[in-house]
Image (cartoon, rainbow, N blue to C red; front, side, top):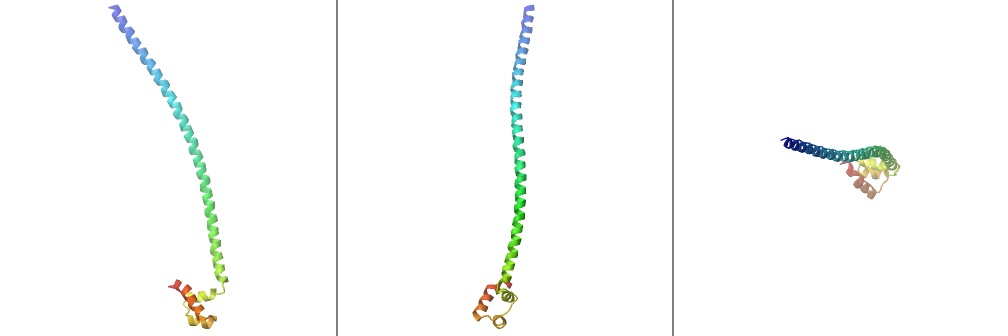
Amino acid sequence: MDTDLLIIIVSCFSLLALGLLWLALEQRKLKSINEVLAEQIDSMSKDIAGLCSAAVTVDSRIAISAEQMADLLDKLGDYEHKESEASPYHSVIQRVRSGASAQELIKDCGLSREEAALLIKVHGSRSN
């Protein structure tokens, strides 16, 4: 009976030793996987930091471009306004837009009938 008990105890310790060995191997695998995942997280963190930095740079460039575009649009508007005022027909066009008739343009501005009719066709429709 002592041998039976000894066999049972040795078997239990053998199973316990095999279980511990298996747990140690699994723990080593998990540690290895954990290190790989930590490296991936570190790499992704660096990528995200780089993307954020690039986004800030792009945002500032867009803001600068928007300011430049607004300035250019203002200058273009000023240029168009000055150009239209510099036109010899500017005052006549303003009169057409305010509703002057062809006869008034012929009489007051010295235009031919054809010029007056053309200016009324081209610029008179905007007031409608």
